[in-house]
Length: 616
Image (cartoon, rainbow, N blue to C red; front, side, top):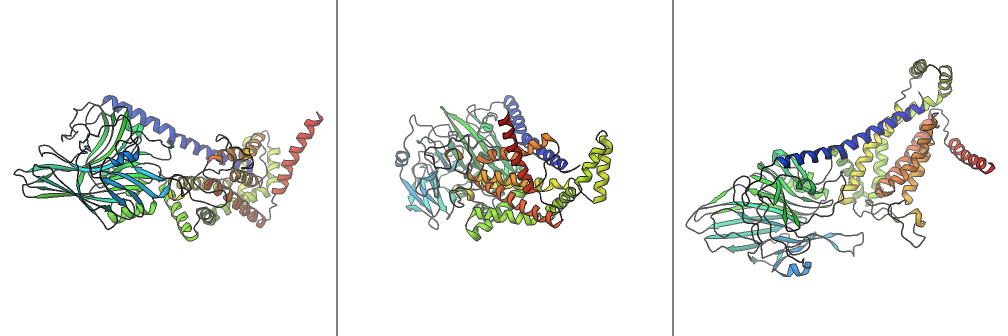
């Protein structure tokens, strides 16, 4: 059992990874879809206008306080307005922070206009800023709303309510107060505050000046109209997300939510979690998110709903607190929060720690292997703040990982060197017992035992690299810190593929290369380093295996052509370090490094094949 067997074990390991990946990314989601479809068929329709826990919900009309349980939302306009026209329909309070710009509508009191000042649509700072929230009336409304629901309490604030404001600009350290009198004995006050990042604090107060007690339920919600364009990758969750007390993390894609049973009425589908404490609910994109965050010490009901409004799907993540009785002459208050911004790792972690938001770090999709992806990001982020370049950080972290796994790699390469040294004896055993495979294997095992060789040791460098590769891929794919992070030269975004292409000679020819054949400079560098690494060892005696390993660098070159540039740079650098490491270890063990001989042999075979074909 020689180097060919080592390669066989590597192939088996990679095959297991493929099989497990298929099970996780394709088979399991398909089974879940079938389960949800079965639940939907069994679901009983609930009476419209009443939430599952019996709390009356307002009618689904414009101006109704979007009930967090029943998913009530305002009606859509027949023809969408421009963003500017929609914003002009209401007097507004300006939002101005180091990270955000936008406004709060006095009509309705919604936070429905938010742009991210530090993020742009492209790598150019002159490109438009990322727009997160948009008001109703536009093509894609997306907003946060706070308020009260209840029965027999008189008029409550709605989407048509015009609030009075004390203050013109909402900024860090400068809160704004909104007031409204319902004319039936209830005085509503809302105090809005914002920090220097992405967190709003909303304190709703109600004073009862009437003769009778009333019962109200505080709510907050995030509502999004229309199904957005998603990345469509199983390694990334986009859609509704929340941590709901002891029920933990809940993730629903837009398609998944559509398969839920009817909820609060025939036009609404969804799911609720009652009597939970701690956590949040929201809607997440790849890099941006909005989340309603209740009082972490009070119980609440959280829900995800999908409602059909004409031809538009409306997705909503809602929180409704427990009942609050307001006696005559008394007042009650409810404090909730809204996260609306970029999913920056340090900001998210800071909010979890400082505000005590349960598992708020799960807003970022670290995946099942978070114990690898999180440390990977921390290491990359550390060197980035030290050196100011994430590409250089990838190179350094890769080098540190090589040092960390040096004992494993050393044993592997030492074993490979010993196997190379006894190659003549292995060949002799194969010839001696070529007709008796059992004796051949026994003789091989005796040789391994005598020379203290572990034939499986050669697998470890490859197997160790698989989780590291996946962790780096995940970090590059999900973390906003990697978005538009430059390296050197033409690589201006490590999270995007190498923009060059061999088809137009890397930009020298005046036409754009098609996306379906994307092969840039760095993928070619990676392919060359992989080819060199494989030529450090003799070709397997099995011709089929030899052909597979010959074409593997070519396959990987094309496959990684569309991967993030940061990942390709990592792979090329890792291959280079592996070649150097293997060269040094084999020389130390007195084994000849056959790299140059193998390279010459490869090209001589190619030349000989061409000569034979020409003579023929």
